Length: 190
Image 1 (cartoon, rainbow, N blue to C red):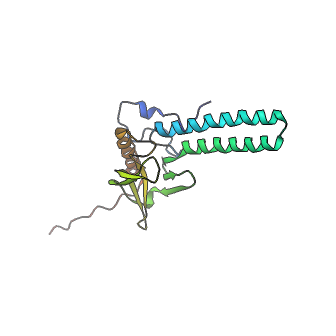
Image 2 (tube, rainbow, N blue to C red):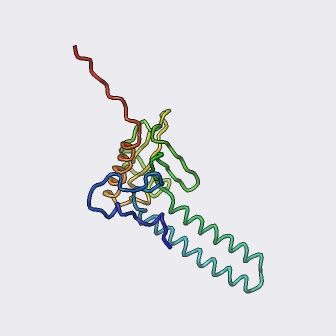
Image 3 (cartoon, rainbow, N blue to C red):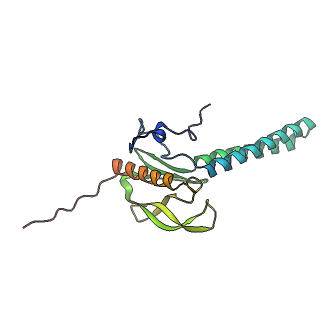
C-alpha cells in the first residue's frame, strides 16, 4: 500500500536541477522528504499503538468490554496522532503554500505572499520550547503577518543543512512561478 506522505517523488532522486519537477501542479505536495526525526517518532508511536492494540485484544478476551473499548480508543488516538505527525510540514501547489501543523493548518494563496526569504533567527529545536540560533524560511503575507514555513532545526531538517537549502529553494521557485511579481520600477531618463 503506497503511503503518499512518505514516498518521495522522482524529483528528489533526479540529478538535474528542475525547480518545479512535478507533473500535476494542482496537487498539494511536500517539496522535501520527511526527516528521520519525524519518521522515527511516528514509527515509535505506531509501535506503542501496536502494543496497546495487543493489550486491548487481551482485555477483550478476558471479558471486560468497557476496558477493551477504552484501550482500542487509545490505540486509535495514537495511530491518528502518528499519521498527523507525518503530515506536518510545508506543502505547495499552484494555488499557494500550506503550513500544516499538528492541530492547525494555514494556507496562503501565492498572490497574497508579499515576501519569502531565508533569515537567521532563533528557531525551536525539534518543535520543543527550547530555541537555538538557526535559519528559517519566512513567508510574509499581506498585512505584514510572518509565518515560518521551514526551520533548519525542525524534525525534518535537523543535521540536514543541504536538504533545508534545497527545500527553501524549491518553495521560493514555486513562489517565483505562481506568485505575483512586483512591478519593476522604471527610472525616468531625461
